[in-house]
Amino acid sequence: MNILSVLTQAVSAAFAERGYDASYGAVTVSNRPDLCHFQCNGALPAAKACKKNPLAIAGEVAELLQNDDRFASVETAPPGFINLRLSDAYLASLAKAMAADERLRLPLMEQKTIVIDYGGPNTAKPLHVGHLRSAIIGESLCRLARFLGHKVVGDIHMGDWGLQMGLVFAEMEARGLGADDVTADDLTEIYPAASAKAKADPAFAEKAAARTAGLQRGDAELRALWKKLRDLSVDDQKRSYDILGVSFDYWYGESDAEPYVPRVMDILRRGGLLRESDGALVVDVALPEDKEPMPPMLIQKSNGADIYGTTDLGTLLQRKEDFDPDEIWYVTDNRQSFHFKQLFRCAKLAGLPGKTECLHLPFGTMNGKDGKPYKTREGGVMRLSDLIETVTENALRKVSESDIPMTGEERAEAARKLGMAALKVGDMQNHRTKDYIFDMERFLSSEGKTGPYLQYTAVRIRSVLAKAKDAGFAAGELLPPETDAERDLLLALPLVPDALLRAFADKAPSVLCEILFDIAGRFNRFYFEHKVIQCPDGALRASRLALLELTDRVLTALLDILGVEIPSHM
Image (cartoon, rainbow, N blue to C red; front, side):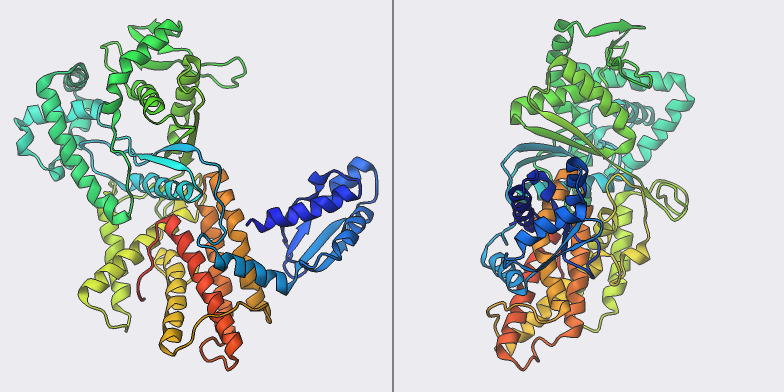
């Protein structure tokens, strides 16, 4: 049930009946809620096309809608707006229809198979704060697509086959370390040391490149070492992902695409796409209409080693054969946009995607208060596990200030949920393409546009419902609203289907944050202005309890898509 679609259909029919194109009947939420609930501006372009007065056209259409009992009023305003207010009876009927449906009459789309590539960690390197956005945005998009009825395959796509492995191998060799001599914590020190050494020592860099090539060619000793290091990294990374509530259907890495690389190379050769350049193999991906230089895509280095783009092409072929997806979404840092432009062009030239549509969904940077990428106090890159721990510790202090009796275990669990909500909503309320400032104090606040505020609202609703149940009161028939606050809350709920569809179309969890904040704000205004349990009118009390139950279900469904859990109390 998409109320904007329903109203658009009604207004479009009126335009058509008056002899105008039905497309002029598009209805939007009013940008002047003091005047009306919804508006249609179609008379303005209709007037231009028909060379008529827009206000006159608006009047013709409004006259036909006057007898529609879904509207309390249909009015026109200069220069040609059609202002619509829904009737209280219709608002109540919409809410009752939502409440009666197991899915809250939220939309189901025609099913597609969608592979979502998110996470993107590297073996032998710890997760850092730069991995946060891919993980939580990707997880939310997976949940959103599944909620809307799509078949979703979530793949972490680990970087486990590139130069970082050769660097670690070379450094371990220099230190005389074997696979059983290192831990995940050791790797966090070994890789940066190896990376720095390679920049200063050409011989070491050459050795690392040779070890990478050896791994990819199948050297048995290097493969065995690689497997142990990969397992170490995965176990370490899973701990952070589990706390974040992020999961993957497949823990595939670049190595899983390696068997497909020879076939990719054959496809490129047969298509006449490969050419040699200084001993390396490249594919020209420039187009005549390019306004900026587009260099060839490097496919294979002069030493025969595969690179990031090569395995990405192999991964595309693998996904095509394993899942036959309609779409593949790549959720990565916006600094990889150029790479994906090259990748998609090369894949299209080779015919690899087939029917599959490939989309890069870039995201911006999480910055500190100085506007630069978030760092530790010492200026280094912060590990994701350290960020999670810091946020959780601050959340625990807030939970400990509560006068609600809780056991130590309950406090720890409440702090985890509070901290992760602060992290996720603090991030995802911004459109994914935007940079944002990480502000722990603000994100953990229970006031304003924060995750804890949304949790607090849900906990408040559930507390009222629990107290009503203890008092022997139950929800009943949802009556037409009698006050502005009640009416405003009822108006927000039917807008959720449109928000879900817009969030999917734009691949933007921020759209869901917007409507969650809107619903929460309207509910809290309603709560402060109205008695619920203490309401002396039994029918009205039962109606208000029904409204609370419906609001709770809607908030819960949307928060779950964002991966936000609701504590039992706050």
